Amino acid sequence: MIFANPSYLYLLILLIPVIAWYIRTQKGAQASLKVPTVSAFAKLPRSYKHYLRHVNFGILVTAMGLLIVVLARPQSTDSWSKSDTEGIDIMISLDVSGSMLAADFKPNRVEAAKDVASQFILGRPTDNIGLVIFAKESFTMCPMTTDHAVLLNLLKDVNTELIDGNATAIGNGLATAVNRIKDGQAKSKTIILLTDGTNNAGDVAPITSAEIAKAFGVRVYTVGVGTQGTAPFPAMTPYGTVVYQDMKVDIDEPTLKEIASITGGQYFRATDKSKLKSIFEEIDKMEKTKISVREFSKKKEEYLPFALIAFGLLLIYILLRNTLLRTIP
Image (cartoon, rainbow, N blue to C red):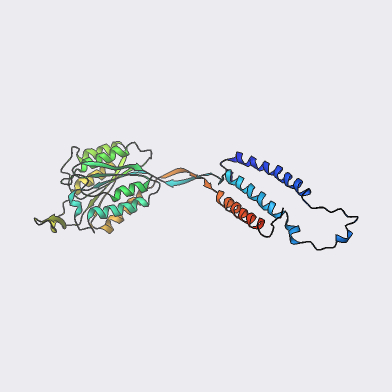
């Protein structure tokens, strides 16, 4: 145990003159009667107050000493620990175009992707993880961080209305993620790109973004999100109600496969939420890098027990002084 304010402990020295003063005053505080002999009083029984007459002072001095210890702020000792753990830099690039509202995933593709990604993030506590969203444009929702609580809160707020969702700029979404991860400190850098469409917008071609990722040593895992064949897509009627119409699922798998191949990653096809979850679990197993982590344990205040005992002793002192050990001037 250490003390945040150890200099206050010098106040304990002041208890010495207090005790000396008490001893001195006690010698002259007893009533006296001059008699030829005290043999007649030797066998008289003594009251319990005679044996407890110094207890109250002892309680008071102890309480004062504990209060001084409280002022010194006792704390648990700090400690460093060194351990090997696993940590990499990861950027999740998530398609939020309007087609991600398709209901082949429950409740829809974007919400299913958010749920599975959240579980993935929770399982990687030592990683630097960031989030990019893209549709017609791309946007960094959260730079890489180890504060996953902030990341998860931002991920929770992701929806298809944040940016123009009338097109899909896969190249821009990947390029933005590469720009965010390229300066990361970890030896292993990974991007997980999730999309349900084809590149039909943006000023950077997907393959060009893949070549840039390769140049910076970034591995890209691409995930095509959507069932085989057709899927129910929401559509607004003239009366303001939403109906679902079956439309063809069109994912540019050749491009996604080439992106993964160029960067040394892998392409996956998620046809439902359970499959998407298993894909993230597979990526989680593949992306493991041993790093040495030096952890610092925070200080913990330990004054409360001393304060409670001191408070209790003061209450006992006041109670005894006014009842059993009351003195009459």
